[in-house]
Image (cartoon, rainbow over the protein chains, first blue to last red):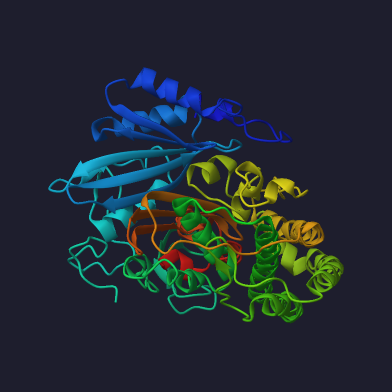
Length: 169
Length: 357
């Protein structure tokens, strides 16, 4: 608790306080670049309130922790895994309560080693979404508390959302 | 002892399994299992053209299908860079708010029946017909509408739609007061709701819970206000919140949301400008990504589409609010009695179609 607990305001406050409440997208970009100069690249403001960034996977966990603790991104909306010809991309959509900011954080893994650090210990909501990505796309999330299939039966051997799995009518 | 509640159980409202570990009557551990209704929609979409996916997106949730096809169209419009004419946006907002009321009424019907107020089921299902009829007049069908299109909606509004919508809102507001008397005045209903299934604010935020369960935990987070889409910035409404964090708070939030939806429908049909309701959309999408984010009746719905220049999406990822919310079930269930499971899980408004996809 401690530092995290203080962020919740007493009853009656309009919105949960956040340090990026009235801060434009550039501030997020700048603070991310200052903290992870070597691994964060490719910034783009997609439209108002939506920022895209790429990060190397070795820094993903630290970066996510930084985002939650220092910048107030407390809500992990979605984790999507996308397969490309030579790589997998794992896209994290992270937002924050009470602000219009949405960060699209992309990390990529090579085809022969599709693994990335789990962020379940940062955002509990990531738990099932990571299991889903493992189930359907075969991405391994290191340090995940229970990395098992969730939508498909446990005895299935393939990952159906991969492009080499033919099906889907 | 582990008990399976489901996959076939009156509590589940769909096909899923809740495994609970009990010590006497008290729940000490819980583990929801989903996947029984997995249809592989994300894979299915990769082999369909963009237009063919609109009716598939309808099938994601039988309770609020219009929000999902609307979300899908918003996502593809973002990818293709299509501007939607203002009249279409107003039609969309009016129709998805009607859908929200219909969805909440369906939830209330099931919830009331779960908690022993069978008369609540009859009343709410009767009044849901009012909005289903409006949507039928607008779109031509009752459950799965196939109504939004890229760059607009399929039809203009039918004659007398404004008059009928305003009448329906007046009727609904009167009926909502009646439900409040019926439920808040029922001692059994209140005893099974108040103080049951407490989900603390910190937990709700950390576990990614969205929608009425989050607002019932006192967090004022509504994408219609916080990240407005469509013409919601021009609407005057207030997201409903409740500080109690229990099942009663979730019920209260949904009831208040129905009042707010009536307000939005009134404004949308009255402010609706004249003009086109549909533009021409290209068949092929460019290479790139599109993102859509809406406030579904059940929480935050989100889609992420990757286009590769062809007429079919390369990848379509769907974020289902219930899939994330149900993963927080353990936090709500542990410490309560087996008899409370129905109230707690019923209060989440489970829709397995979208959770399993």
